[in-house]
Length: 122
Image (cartoon, rainbow, N blue to C red; front, side, top):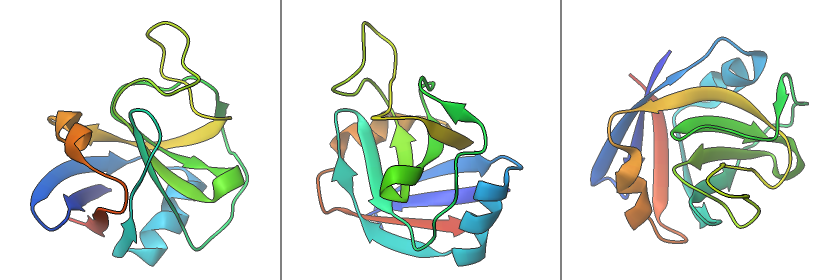
C-alpha cells in the first residue's frame, strides 16, 4: 500500500506499507494529521489505536516506518536516536516495522516539534 507523507503541507515523501496487521490498522484511519515529536533523528506521533508488537525489532534501518506500542506511536526513522550505539538506529524499545520511506528521507531532518505531519493513501 502506497502512502504520501506531507510535512506542513509543503514537503512530500512517498512511502510503502507492508502487509502486517498493524499497517492495516493504520490504513483504516487514514488520512491522519498529527503534530510531530522529535527524538534524535526519529519523528513520531500518537495514533488512535493500540496493537501489540507483531515482529518486535530493537534495531531498524534508515527510512523505516514503524509502530511503537508503549507510545501508540507511528515512527519515521531517518538516523540515529539518543539510545543508538555507533551507527545503528535504535528505537526507545522494540517496534514493529510497518513500511519504508521511498526517495529522499533526508527532508525529515528539517522537521521541528509540533510541525504537522499528514499521512494519506496514494
